[in-house]
Image (cartoon, rainbow, N blue to C red; front, side, top):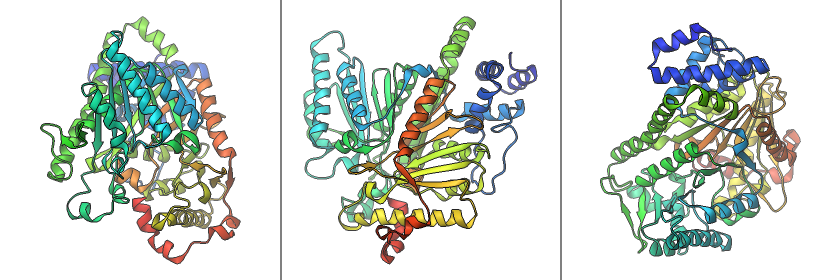
Length: 544
């Protein structure tokens, strides 16, 4: 069954032929799937694609949102999607959910060794231990092999890290990569992003250990030729051994890989460039991030990064024009999954991830279930209001004090787990005050000798026993993720039942190691929070 003609006329009357073609092809796909499975595909995209409101205020369910597949609602949803977020259609069979730190580490090493054209790594920092050195050695082997063999002479390695975190200490991320940069200067690039908000007197006064609290490069993307791993994990030994995170491998998904390669390159272009002598320089024509004018830097950086988003949409339109009807029909059967890259860089004026996340939470209906997880439970006021005011059931997973990454730290950092206990208790009390205990549940992750860093969500539509959508990447849903740092994640939307089962298994495995929070949880002796910690908690919420 094709999309109704009223829908086609409306689209073609409003949009250019290229965009109209995008709408018509995707709507055809959904209507055909509706015949097969009673509208499930139609409901699938609705929560993600509705137009975002500037502020969540009082939430009402819009016409044509999840559960209401009217053509007018679809027009609204697809219009917003086409204008704001690139959409990549891929086979669900090309996506694998990785489940353990070691699997993540081994997958990266194997793909570095076999890379022929490009290795692109974006992380907060690179650690300095033995496991990290082994990864650097893999890069060296790949670069040396490419130099000696004609089969991969063009291999390039690009690494994007945060300047403040990557420069901390005498032995740091920079010193780990310098030998490669010195030996393979023409094949190697190391970019160090410096937030424009750390400047002047503030830059001089904030201690090195805490200067990253002002804002960092927090994107975690690991790319090898046409395959890419999106994660929340950094390149550090604990993330390879006993720090639980989330990781998704998209194998042979060239369009997605090209997008993230371009995104990392764009952020790299506005970053400081590491030189073989360990100095840093600014690219020609670029404003210095902390010596130059702050507004000029942000404007230039935003323009460069938004070029990536615009170019991706233009490429998609061109490819749709080139595809024949036979190719389109064939791809519709094979490519049953959509990948939407979501970028959040509020210091640069980019907030597509925030807009999509707010809309997703807004549209979550009474019969839907959202499993949301964050290693640092610190929802923004907007996100918290949406969780408390909309109708979906929520199961929120966060770290117990013992698996918090700051547990046992020295100085004020050691108080951070207690601050998160206080934040969780405030949230739990608010849930109880509103009488929402049957709808909103808080869970704590427990695992001896491990820490917990997983983040994202799984979205279950009404009547479905498997999630159709997940968010996975670097954002934590907190103040820093939304307002201070550079973040990226992907929304994966799928009709592929095997991939849905992978997502379900991932979610259930994480929650299986948790206990539900109740009144008695906060009566335990290890949940006592000192008065001074309560007083500094608002500061911790904004900076950690």
